[in-house]
Length: 83
Image (cartoon, rainbow, N blue to C red; front, side):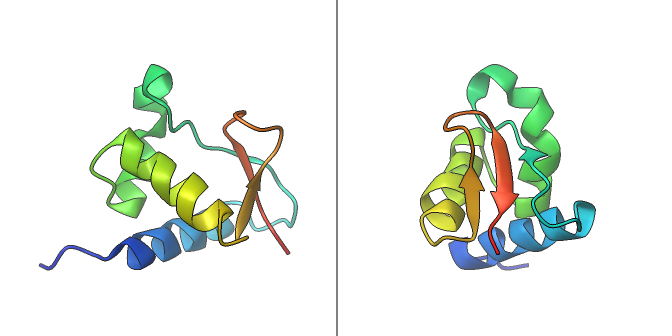
């Protein structure tokens, strides 16, 4: 089975967030920093992320940078899918 691309991982993560929290504007707590490592493992599995650093990259440097999600307040681990 080939390894999914970064874009595929990010898309899978975004779709899973939308399915689990379908109400618009719902903040989703996704721990993605090492101190809360075990709490984020569900989302790591969904995104096929090899580490919490990769999950953080997908959330912050890909999905948030492209305008698909916002983290409010900053560094809160609470993400909202943007309209």
